Image (tube, rainbow over all chains, first blue to last red; front, top):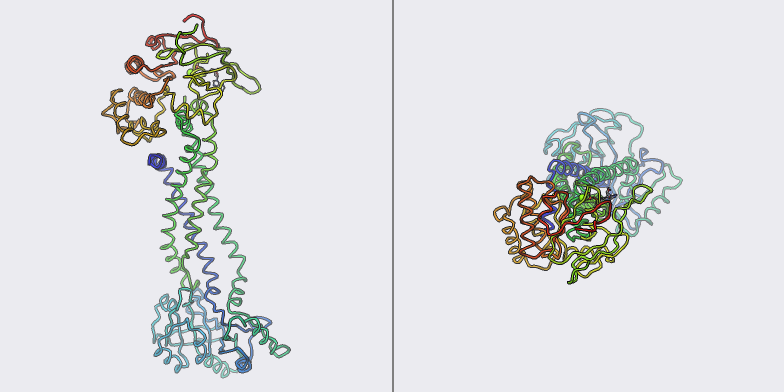
Length: 385
Length: 230
Ligand SMILES: Nc1ncnc2c1ncn2[C@@H]1O[C@H](COP(=O)(O)OP(=O)(O)O)[C@@H](O)[C@H]1O
Ligand SMILES: [Mg+2]
């Protein structure tokens, strides 16, 4: 009771100093949480991946396609329950800044493989019968204000020309980790348009998505698929959807590592600031500590006062910093639009923020507490004369 | 010269030196004397003569290099740090030149502080603190912080804090050194009352002859040695 009172009143003795330290902590904890959330968002694609789906692509590189004829051969394989395919379209909506993924997919089969894309049946029907129709995710619709029936023009980069789509359906994510920032349209429309334009590469698909009956057979079926097309025109590389997604992430692994390092550097900097504050504070009070010792209070009591004050400041910074993380992450997510399809503060991030704050509180108090506990009484008393 | 009754403080061949760089500077050389229970003694001497050092040794906040130092039957030179802390809490009341109150605690809380080391319940502590503060004439200042009190008032709070645990000895190092004449007289009168009415043994360091007159006996320190005649 008295102990807590002493700690709190001590913490509030230099309001400006404590206030600035708490402010620094808030900024650091907030930055730490945001950076971690960005890293999480980076991996969210892999997080939402299904273990029951395989992705088959050209063995040489993702930019090389596969013949559409592979579809029937894979579908007939043991353990394969469904197959569909998709092409990366890479179009631009108004300006390249407006990034969101677009895929030309087999309209009749693709969504059977993705039950996490929840589409009202009437809208789905409307999409299937409109060759120039498209399906978009809720986040994408909200970001640009698209509604069912709206025109959605894309300027092709891989496939030249302006492509005028009509929004026929909007899908919701079944889980929070479902990416609802994508656009899907008819592969048939893409293929026929390219044929008419006299393009050489028609009847090709970017990737096959394979649904298997038992996720435990993923490795075996992947091997079998790739074996089937060995020495053929286009050799394949098949892996789980998760591995496929992580492959994308690993291309930018260096950035992720850099962000991680920066997030810990931020904590380290605030630790230095906080340690300085505590050292300054403890030095000023050395005569008070000596007096308490003379009265019979032990070194543990003094150390407790200093640790308590440091932790109280850290706690204030943590509570405010964590509380601010939510609105700031929300604002950030709005700013970057569909760049990060899933952007949410995870419970794990909050725990790490709290742990970081506690570690800073403890570490900052360590040296001052040790000194205060050890300084001889007469020396401490002499420091005030 | 030994008092007939067992003295409350018994000092024999006490030595203390400080290290200054490579050298050891002797501060107290072979000090021997007794203080009887109920005494009020003033330690005088020029600045740097070792008065504070001697007082600190008696109060158990510093350790002698040699000799024996028995206070209330305990040879405190042999106690460990932790044992000394407990011993001080039970036996010594401290009065400092600059009061040494906790600035974040009220007058009441400052006086209550030493009682937190006892097993007294909250109600008992409250009663004792109220009594002590009224004894020093500050019953109407209990919720004041040190910064809201004059120097003399702060010293009176400090004196209440010193005797709240009913210690065996009160040690005061220049208790009037930072006060004007009038406040100093208040403090000295208060110490005399504590000595006369409560029978507290008081050891007071001072270089002020006027202050020393409040004491029963005066001992002079000169270059680390005690005078022979009082
Ligand atoms: N902690 C210390 N370290 C070094 N020298 C000290 C220390 N404490 C006291 N001294 C020296 O011991 C001598 C006596 O000091 P002190 O007991 O404070 O004198 P007084 O109280 O009589 O003025 C002085 O010369 C002082 O400089
Ligand atoms: Mg002195």
